[in-house]
Image 1 (spheres, one colour):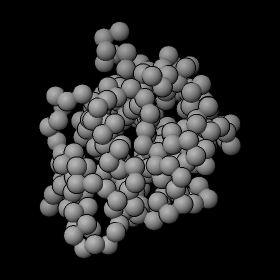
Image 2 (cartoon, helix red, strand yellow):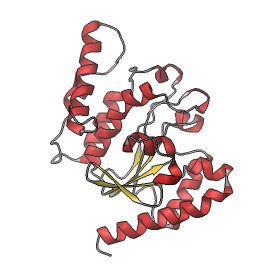
Image 3 (tube, rainbow, N blue to C red):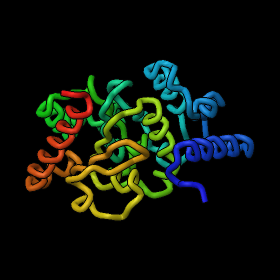
Image 4 (spheres, rainbow, N blue to C red):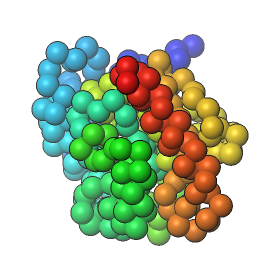
Length: 234
């Protein structure tokens, strides 16, 4: 049985799904065939900023799942295309949907403060989500929506090639680690995601509601910064 988290397998599955939808004339994907060519391995010699921009352009009108129905803007990602550290949330909210950028509302402002506290900012890291379109009423993304959209995130990870990934919240952590374990058991340690070290912490939106999560989040991001410093030889 193929590894369900093998990036090559995921990329090939995404290609087949998109091509099949086009052949059947379902009208599901409004995506050009160039995106099908771009979802592949081995493009590390190309400029990552250019690859991300091209990929964003190709998927911006995606209609592969129901989330596109209420979308204003697809929320692709933001930050350094060659980032060593990548943050992954669950999905856009109202502010993000309007602006087309992840983490721009109150939770995003708090994330910026957290980044600044450990010496990072949006120009140094890269920020993306499990799903690119806003779930209605800010509900959790459904399993089929995540399954449909996550190949886009995997392609971003493939292009950026981060050394560290930080999952913000339970949804992104469980999706990337393919687990049902609760966040409290996942945080405070590094996990392996296809050879990339992955850390789990609370979503900034949770910190706005529950003060008791602030201290463990601070401990987590200090771990992240220490690991980053060790990796770059500081």
